[in-house]
Image 1: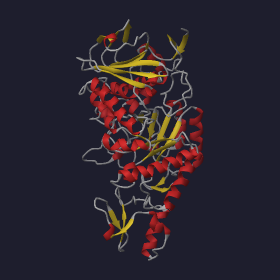
Image 2: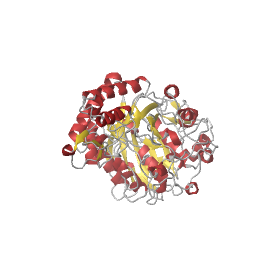
Image 3: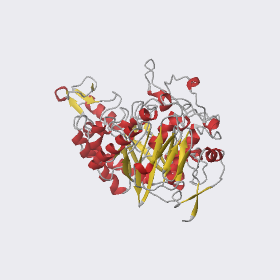
Image 4: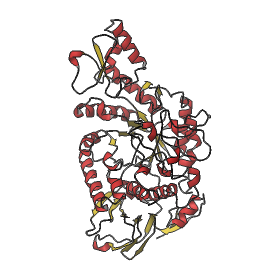
Length: 533
C-alpha cells in the first residue's frame, strides 16, 4: 500500500505545529482521502450573525466586507496546510433590509441591509467563497415580513381608505373578528373591523401563502438569490407558515423545494422546526432540518459529553433517529449542532477547562451529516439570556478577535465582557491546547475521512462500559470506527469481541490524551476520541 501525505495530527505535537501555522506533514498508510474532491452537501457549516462578526469600516457594525477580510481564518482555500479552521459552508443570518438589529423582519427581499453593505459586496463574498470551496446559504424569512414592508404598508393604507379591492390586502393573513382562529395572534388595523395575523410580533405580519401572487413573489425571491450565487437557504420558522397545520406546511415546502431545484438541482436547504424529534421528522420529506434533540444543555450531545448519559445512549439515539429520518426520506442528511443564535452559548454549560466542550465537539463533528458551528463556539465564547435581561442579543455578542476589530455588541446586550473566560482568537491561534485548535483538528479528521459524514452506520454496543462507545461507518467499501471515551481515565478494549472488522491504522484522535492500537486492542485516553480504519 502506497504512502501518502495527510495533514492529520497524530497527537498534540502535530496540532501544536499546525496551530503555529506550520506546514509540517505527517505520513500514514492508506488512501489519500484528505484531498478527495467531494462536491456535495456533506459539509461543515459556520453560522454568522453578520452584525457581530467583523467590522471593516469602523462603524461598530459587522459587515459583509468584514467576513471577506476574515475568510483566511475560516478557510484559506488550501485544505492541506492546516492554517485555517477548515469549514466549507457558511450560513448568514438575515442580510436583507430590515429595521431591527437581528433582521428577522424583512422590508425588502431583494436587497442587502445598508448596515451590512451592498449587493456588490455580497457578490464579492460569494465569489471569494466559491474560490475557496465554501458554500454560502442565507437565512430566508418567509413566514412573515416587516410591518415596514411596502406590501404591508400598501395593505394597511388600502384598508384605512376603504379600498378593499387592493391586491396587497390578500398578500397577508388579514381577517375579520369572526374569522380569527383560536391560538393565533392578531392585531387590529387602525380602528377598522380587520385584523392581521402576527404570531411572533405585531411588527411581523404573516404572509398569506394561499395567494398565488404571493407564491409568484417567492419564486422571484428564490431566483434572485440563487442567481446571485447562494447555494441554498436556511428557512426560519418553517412550522409557522400554516400555524399548527403540518400537512399544509409540508405541502408548501415541497412546492418551495420544487421551485428551488428547477433553478439549482443541488440546492441545499435546512429548515428550523424547533420541536421534539417526532414533530421534526415529517419535515424531512421536504429538506434537511436542524436536529434540535441533539442541541442545548439537555440535548444528546451535551448530556453525553458531561457524562450524564452513556456513550452507548448517544450512539443508540443517533442511529435510531437517523433510521427514523431515513424512513421519511432515504436521501435525507442530518444536521447536528450544539447551539445557535436563539440559544444560550454552549461554553456556559460545557467546560473548556475540563475538556467537556472538546468532547461535545467530537461527538457531533465526528458523526453523520452536515454539522453547524455557531460563530465563536470554536473559541469557547459565552453568552446567555438572563431572566433579568430577557434578550437574545446576549447570545449574539461581538466575535472576540483580540486584534482591535471595532465590531461591537448588538443593541440591547447586557452581558459583561469580564464573564468571557476562554480568551480570544488571537490568544488561541498558537496555543496547542486551545479549544480553537481542538476544533480545527477535529474538522481536519472529519474532512480526511468522508466515511464519517457519508457512511452507513453499524451500531456497536459495549456492554459494561458507561463512558466508552462508538460505531462503524462504511462508505464506498471503506470502513472506519469512531470511538469516544468520556471518562477521565484510559480504557483498553479488545475490539474483536464486538466486531469482525480488522483495524490496522489510527486515522486521527482528538481530546485530552492519545490513542494506540495493538492488533485489535484499542487503548484510548480519557476525554479523547479516535477514528481508526
